[in-house]
Length: 132
Image (cartoon, rainbow, N blue to C red; front, top):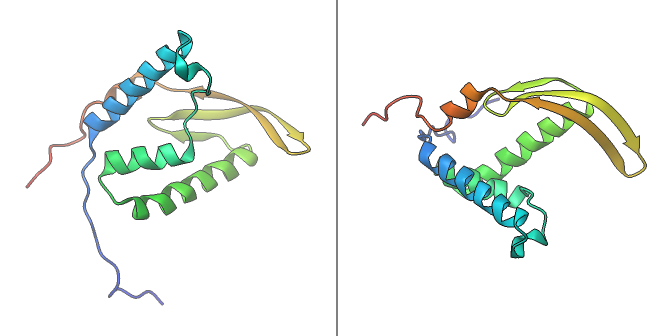
């Protein structure tokens, strides 16, 4: 049975400028890595902890609320990839599994991700004005 007394509804606004700032910072780090700077030692990979921190920054929600949602999302995406499902997830894009190779300690997936320029442009523009 569903208990309505403990549920609460919160409203959050999308911080589109924070997404643009994160994208700019990531591109700057990639340039430093390509030029052979200090960060060239470590691969330029987004880790789960960093993803959670970015979602917290963009959404304005608390980390304790964001972490289980991000982990559940990653689990669902991982299962979909293992099942070789095609995913259409704007603005990330359409993900198609081309090949799959099972290994002793995991699997290798060769994917194709198609991302429209229109989806990339909409990340920087808010969907609607914030009302009071």
